Image (tube, rainbow, N blue to C red):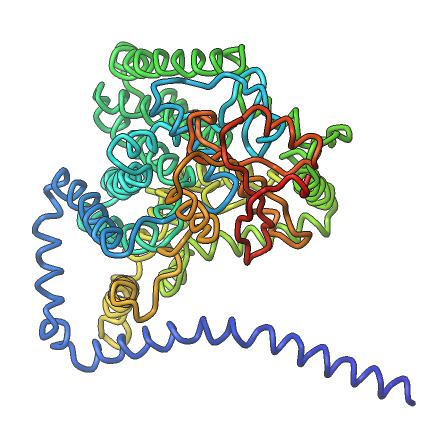
Length: 578
């Protein structure tokens, strides 16, 4: 009897715990539901509101310019550049925070110095850090695309300007891609929605990750596909070649998945009932595509030859073979145990090994799969935009998007076998997602209830609330009423130390110790391309004997030591501390 009572109590406690966890999510979901519901009711009850608020004029303006496709593409990209650029002028540019961002900035600094890579440093073991190779050369492990666009920004005054340009290109490219699949006015609306969230309020723009450029590459090849099939112009084959180059030099694996789907669609068309003449296919499609992509691919091979010594070995492969134990795909066995020079690096790669091992179990696969969906939803499907997915069954049956569904299916299956996932892994297919969303909106548009345009009211409500929320958040951020957290992105503590030491005369070396609970995803030991020419050199504290090597090497520099624990202040590195 007592056992039954305790069982009931445990069930009640479990139910209460689940309810407590679910309540915040329910509230977050129900708020936009309520707002959209109110707007829909008002639009149906008082249709004149739409015109009274000036929204009818905006809508008519959009319809009027939608057929000027080139102008629309320009306006979408330019609006992102102006709005986010103005925000940066008022609030400052984002700062880097995570390993990957510092690695991309190393690549940018290298290219900005007019080099493809840097010589190995004699003291490299003191500077060893994440996502960087040290042998045979010193360089970021990532493909060169993101570094190149950030280097352009560095040449213009700040690397983030390059990221802003990439974001503007992303928004414009997705609008252009949509124009190839759906009517112009819906493509324009899709471009506006991309600017509202992905461009302005996501880490795609507000950081230094390789997210915008792969989205550009994916949009270019997806937008070229229907244009090639309908017109077979050489220009579209050239654009597809450029898109393939961008994908290969930003996110090669995910880019390959997308390109595979596009290639299948092209071959199916080539051998289908509406196939073009062989001469047209060879001269207007194959030849321009090859002549565009092959020279660009040759440059990529030369780049890797300079960095790793082989045109067929990526810097990424060198880094993972040197440091990693856990591997990226579910079927791969771990690498053997490695020996590390620094405890923090060992902790990071041991965590990776645990995660990769867990992912190879059914329970781990399901748990991490749920996490992937959560991260995806947080960036791409912020309410109320996902509400339009109620029309997904209708959109899925639309024969015009059968090919995109096939391409998307291949892409998602390919992502599922990767152990790790962040939203920018999906970036090559971002344009594809917006195509599906716009198809849902188009189907919703014609839904009526009791001869009243419920679908039109719903589409207008979702669009207005989605864009209006973005504008409200931007206004609050500029007014410092409620700072936009994405715009405040970055490691403020490290930046504060840099400002403090930059204000001092002379050159410095900062030795970094890490508190046991310091975030593994944060790192302070990162340097630029010219380590010895930098005013501040960041190094790891390796104990008195090893530190002395660095002291002897950098005679004349001021040495500091810092405990990275969240309240760190640099202190002079004295003899007794050795």
